[in-house]
Amino acid sequence: MSLFRNKRLYYDCAVITVIALLFSLTYCLFIVRNNFAPAGFNGIGTMLEYKLNFNIGYFTIIVNTPLCIFAFFFIDREFAVKTFVFSMAYAIGNIILKQFDLSALQYDAQGIDTIYPVLIAGAMGGFVYGTMFRRNCSTGGADIVAKYISKKDPMLNFFWINFTINAVIAFISIFVYAKHDGNGALILDYKPVCLCMLYCFLNSLVANMIIRGSKSAYKFLIITSHADEIDREILEKLRHSATRVKGKGVYTNSEKDLIICVINKRQLVEFKDILKKYDDTFAFVETVNETIGLFRKSR
Image (cartoon, rainbow, N blue to C red; front, side, top):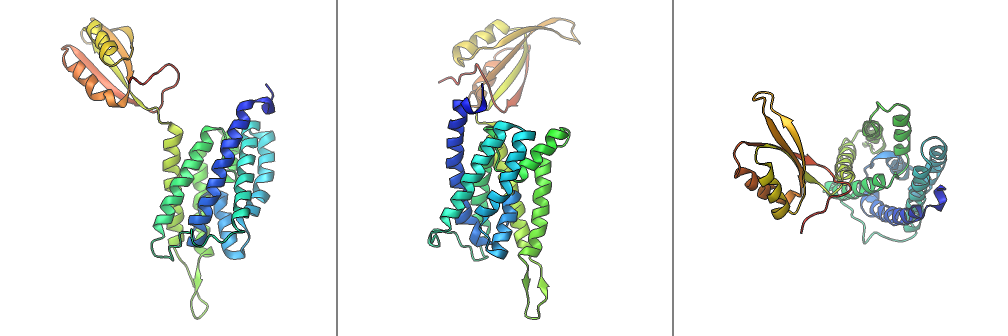
């Protein structure tokens, strides 16, 4: 099917546009007035706006248009189109918002409690980043560069590439937000760097939680001689099924049943109570980040 005949693409683009506009609102309300550079190329745009009063919306268009064209031909077409939609919506949102007086709504920490707008903006940025990544999209800029590098050399981790770019931006912000004393001497300010790194950390933390998904569960691996009884209780009490395979103990050289079962998190204690009733039973549990396919949460 042609890319532009895919109805899902248009639905995703509509969602991406809304999220991009919300992200531009977050930028105007929590970042502009508090003198710190957020992650990625947006950080460069923020510093340019601080120094030259050059609207980050225009910077986003200038930078991301050629990058998205490059991504269309050399990375992934769907990824490029969605990223372009996000970038343009974000840019237009910033350009439009600058036409209004938002001072009454903006969080101006006045250099005192700057950590609070960083926490809010970082959490929102992580939500946006994670949501975009799950839809095969990005926020543009450094993400496109990192994706291309990781595609050319899969051994290079996408997130470490992004971290390196963000670290460079944080270092540059030391000089951008520096002040001059009465004698004209330059006074370096490390606070914007700390705020930038905190933003990046929170951004990555929230994004990773979203990327991993919310359908987390527990996987039990049970070795027992009471497989029939345990299977019955899994079906009747937990309303889940299981997979049973035959195994052979290395030490005893005797055959055992091996039960594999995935359950909801809230059923952990209940499952443990079932296993405690049967002797000659050994089990261990692992965390499952996300379930895909035939797995229904029991009511």
